[in-house]
Amino acid sequence: MTLASSALDEAVARLRDQVCALHAELTRYELVIWTAGNVSARVPDSDLMVIKPSGVSYDALTPDRMVLCDLEGRLVAGDLAPSSDTAAHAYVYRHMPEVGGVVHTHSTYATAWAARGESIPCVLTMIADEFGGDIPVGPFALIGDDSIGRGIVDTLRASHSPAVLMRNHGPFAVGIDARAAVKAAVMLEDVARTVHISRQLGTPLPIDAADVERLHDRYRNSYGQTTP
Image: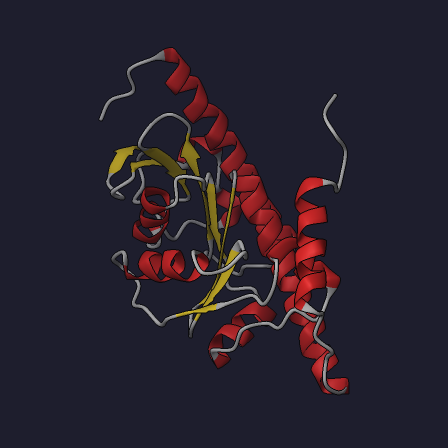
């Protein structure tokens, strides 16, 4: 596939900048170490995505080093090999057209829940707000093909949550764009840590399902500033 228009070129350039900057948020919030983790963004009105290159240090990431792939995970433009999770990201974009961004981290507390194969219960209003209920666990899958992507999609389709704990692997989060996906990943690690600590103190108290629905609806539809 070739870039056929200046508008598409501009969109890709903008997303290279954004995706590169968002990787700095992963290190800022201590969600990754070394070269692990990745952020991608769907290029609007195309079958393309921008994603981190494989095995490159976060300190060495620049917009021009971000990789452009199609939604089958094939390299379209870039000098470096794409992330080893590219097939999973591509599968999500193909099967969840509402998703504009995907992020994968190995953040400590969320990954600890994934290692246990245990969902994070909805015992905090922050969980109800952002995740709309328990944060689910997806199946174990090997890296390298779209098996992880299938597990992500199948799990998220049965949940309000924008994040899934892939068993024995770690969290993936999605959003309407890449920034929203990173936000979900940051919030996921925060609640994973808090619920873990609460369990050391006793038994966390669940929030009633009807209240979870009300909180989630308010957060999606009323929270924050309205655009005039």
